[in-house]
Amino acid sequence: MIKESISFALAILATTIAYANTDSLRNEITKYCNNYQATVGVAMTIVEDSDTMSINGDKMFPMLSVYKLPIAMSVLNSIDNGSQTLQTAIHVSQKDMHPDTWSPLRDKLTTTDTFINLRDIIQYTLIQSDNNCSDLLLKSIGGVEAVQTYLKELGLPNIQINNSEWEMFQSWNLIYSNQARPRDITTLLTKLYSETLFSDSCHSFLWHTLTDCTTGNSRIKGKLPAGTEVAHKTGTSFTTAEGITPAINDVGIITLPNGKHIAISIFVAESKESKAVNENIIAEITKMIWDYGINIE
Image (cartoon, rainbow, N blue to C red; front, side):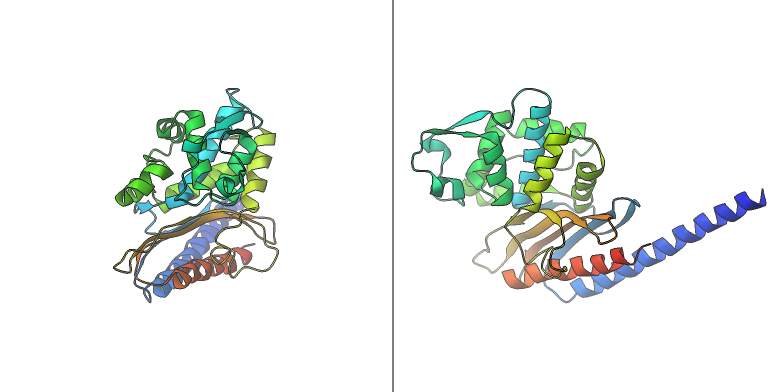
């Protein structure tokens, strides 16, 4: 009985210390963010410990290309359900390759009437954030409604995906219709890592694709030690004529030296700062969370 009481007391003490440390981290990040003309949303979870912290974690933020991650996850879910495979050939026509948007695949193609397999389309979408490829993924599974259904099945209906890249390009304000709470994106990342959402082959493919991401190297990865494994996806908006940047984002999973993992979502919205400053905000916050994570036993 005495041993049980001691064990219970130690558990309470450990929880109290963890909350105190999380509060200190939250205060440090909040104080830092107060130096900038931007709204910042942060949510992090130490996956193995369920240790969480957030700032504006329940506020809706525009995702921009972060939304390509749940789109790709929905496609991989359809692959595991047998409706298609990574080798499924997708027809690519001229009308699929819009000229006035970011699209490395379009720039590489020598013809606009060809077939590309889903594996390549997903990689272009997540690694280089190809907008045309993102819309091809949506088309392959039946549009945004299919992604929204998948997110509801995951228990994350507040991740709202309502418009394609081409629709956003045609109407600027539609970038605000694809939105999410930092807390929900971090939950999605935690599920991606710790739950059996996909077959081993699809999970391995997704993980390695996200770690190969070439965009936003000055954000989550910006101030981490060289060689740190980061599986992530960025989102970036243009800046308005008034000097307002609606979104500079980065979300992902960081592998700590001790083998634990941090799921992290950082959104910088309605910022009057430069792109370089916005990216540095993400890098500095990530470094604070990294320093917190590496000191957890």
